[in-house]
Image 1 (cartoon, rainbow, N blue to C red):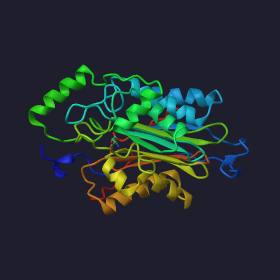
Image 2 (image 1 turned 180 degrees about the vertical axis):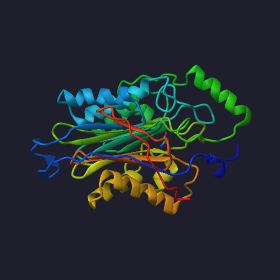
Image 3 (image 1 turned 135 degrees about the horizontal axis):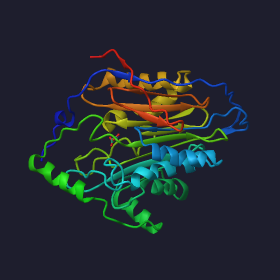
Image 4 (image 1 turned 45 degrees about the horizontal axis):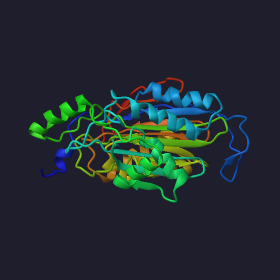
Length: 326
Ligand code: ASP
């Protein structure tokens, strides 16, 4: 079927959402990229949407003196295995040909990164992404090559298309209309960021991408700088929402660079959203960023109402509508 860019977007609410952050007294003392003092480090886990179980899985690792990289991987694995989560891993909605294709990436405090995209049949793409980071000279493996790498490293190939996803896809095919519904059907991607007790930052992002996307479509989530970015000197950011808009603005990298210039996580997320508002068609899409900085402050900003995130304190963001930019 032909693909219309206009039909890519759906009508929804207008407006911008901001969320609050707390300040801390942490004073960074760094040597290269390593934190040498953890006296006032404020460890934190923050993740997109409201997956408390994922956030708790990550926080359990941090609170037991584990590392941020282990924490974000553990957190991301929770929705990957959850058939009820229809936007990530097993149970994710398929593309328009009926294939569940997965995108994921991970980045650590050393600036090392790994990702997989267009991966099929593997329940834990985030763990494959971590192995790409740790075992290969590359950052991103795609499709068949990513699958081969996963199988060589002991992952099992399984059918990820659940009965309910298959049934819905068969129903969708009757009209094959492509109308994503903001915040509901398409955007439960988990992006998760952590600072451990040593003050080190890591992040991960994993998704099955947009439901009924074109076969072969890859979004922002596995792309370092777009769906996720970590700079252990500055902070970390991750994105959810319409990946094309995030890709075109390298959103997560932008958020971190804005924090480098002195913006708070909230301000940086807002500025990155506003970059999309200024440069792209934005009215019918959702974009949500979350970010943390080295001071343990966190923040978020979303283009549309309805975006939420959760932290290890189980604080879910409260929506705060501000003026429409239309
Ligand atoms: N960003 C993801 C993508 O475009 C979708 C999402 O956030 O749910 O693939």
